[in-house]
Length: 287
Length: 295
Picture 1 (tube, each protein chain N blue to C red):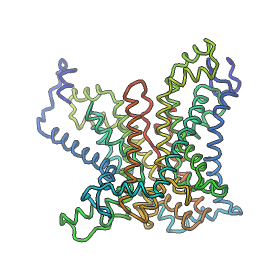
Picture 2: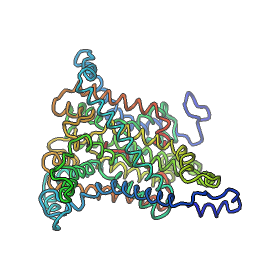
Picture 3: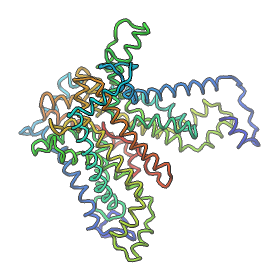
Picture 4: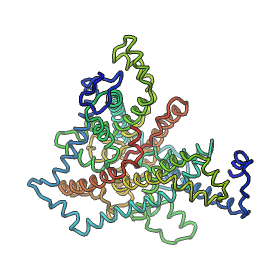
């Protein structure tokens, strides 16, 4: 037991033997192999062998202007959602980190309740709010602000608002935890040295909370890139993103090789972003 | 904030004069900030809870604020075999997924934290992958593998897919609990003559139980609330409540959807509230993992 033969770990007292470890991990390996690696591999292979080796489906993504437009829209939407989530989320995280007791619990509940609620239900709520005879239009009509119902649903704006709503907690929580970890003495010191609230925020709090901002921003950006449910429901067919385009290609057009190429692209971008920003993303630390 | 901090810590160090700009602006700023935050919190909360009042309104179309109070939509939901079938299918799938993911995830976490595994790092990264890879990619990929072998619209197929999606949550909470658990306790049990399995069952498991329980709740919700993969691998018979919601939102927007949504919200909030309650009772701080599923 003392000599770790070719093991990556230092061995330690009470360590499980290798055969036992393997046996315990085997169900997980089989599960991920069958339900994760095999399907993803089959999808990717299908995009380049259909049935002979070809790059046509990948080339098509960048060659046809409509698909290029969808890619640009996807990235643009994700970027706008990320910026909006930051602008809305930072003040919430800031106030939450400075409150104690009841107020902090109340704010935390407001942030966590949406997070625990089905994305489908929340997207449905946005349909109810934004549709032609929806709550927003009815309210504006009855107040006399408008005399024609506005076209709100199935617009890019609707997708952006609903996605910001759905993803906002993923921005608030990492910023909150990095704000919480700033020792309060630092701000007190700045204030004692004559800095006003704005200066002490700008020179102390904000720079020290940037790791949380980056983590939240990358999380929100990655999640928005591959988001399916909300764009499918509130975006409609006119506002396809790469995720809803994949859905359309498979459900309506049965073009599996092309869907495979699109999925491969989305997968590569997502994993690439994760690999580049691995140190910033917080859940890696938990294991 | 400024008054308490200055008097408590720096009363003696008052060599720095107080800011000379004595004005109302900090108070105005504070109120503006608090007001803005209140608006953002309303933006977060209202669309989440709006389905509840809508589900008890009398009109057969979406009306807000709802006029009249009725439980008709709940009755319609409960007496519709399609909705009931989908709800029961979702519950069955979520329970089986919870059992599968909790057992597989707990055993594998134990092997990763306390064992000697070749390629442990690769396995850890692979385990987290289902959290990161967009669900639309997994949905299409799973359909491609499941359809030819009859696993679409099928209970077993759903349990396999959802277990894959849920197992990362169990691994995260259980690994965290194992890292906090003092291995000396397990060694003591082994020294006192327990075998490995007995030590695990009688010493390790009771100590990591809150982490396992939290992982199980996350796994249940990851399955019950999952929409994208469920949409793609559902069939005419075997479909989940999320697939049924998806279909009806697209074609048939009645307040029954609000009733079914309210049921889903209540199930989620009750379970997560339970986890929070467990967490607030002390001992376990591992459970504050945000639920990053159903995308």
